[in-house]
Image (cartoon, rainbow, N blue to C red; front, top):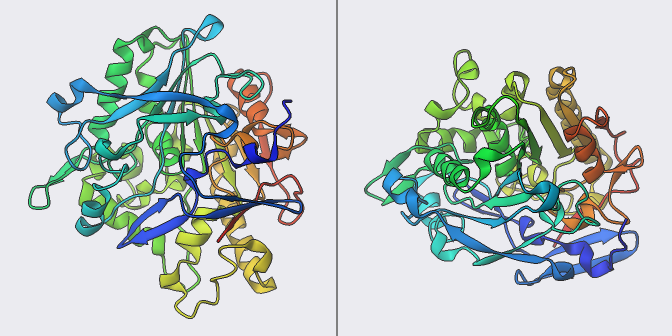
Length: 419
């Protein structure tokens, strides 16, 4: 594998840091420290281009406006596309961007003044790293595919279809998803001989919810699979005994008209909010699906399990930012969360077509960062890094169902520490 300089370790850190505005939860370019062994790396600039990564320009979807497929503020949605070549010319990887949700009018009004709600604020170029890299030494199985990053500007994991006229808000995530797929089909994706729908965080949830839809865009002869990275958000009890994430999801589903775009098989026996939780959906996804998740997901610890609203006395304030500062009882609570995650995937894991990589790390989104996807010191399970596990599963080279032993047994983790 390619030698990676220590500065290159901090790839794509725009996914990390947490901020909350009236229910608007997003991974932000807040200051973080990445710790490995005895080294710390401070990252501040969101313009940082790791390891001279490929920069790919933003394409706005001109045909989207006529379909009402617009961002929260009514601007056009967009994507970044790097064309495939050689053996990958007819292979397509669609990466759904993450970035939290908005669950109230106030939160969504705020969100539309950011790149998560308006293409006016989106970066004109993005660095393609990890699973999006164009270098074989960094991305051995997908480097020469058509690689597309679909920008996220609706706040409901590409599933809403509603509006709030008084607040001038368009909740059109489902339409954006469909308009993007139609546009890419017209640009050659309809000829794909293999395709992979992927996504990180809120985009990882979207890749689960849209997986079977994606499969249906292609002929049966086309190999189609899905990958969810850090999208296994659990309906968990927080440290106060409440359900912070369920409350947030309830607002998202109700405000944005999500219900009609959730899997029918789930809606037929559970309430819509429950069907926004992937644990209630993954067992019925027909298309092969790979779940990549940290057992101690950093975002869920900070924003679902131990958010400040559930911890007014600040007992968890140090632990939620740095696992090395957790008490024995706090670690025990987090072990309970890991157990809940393993229980949630039991049925899913029985299917031979599905894949798993659940490592006992304090991390979030490991497929887009080069240091965690494929590098000299990447996290491994059974001596296999994430990139090779996903590739072996996608191409049926081997069955991949890797579940780590409990913390603190894994010394290969790239754990996140928040300032």
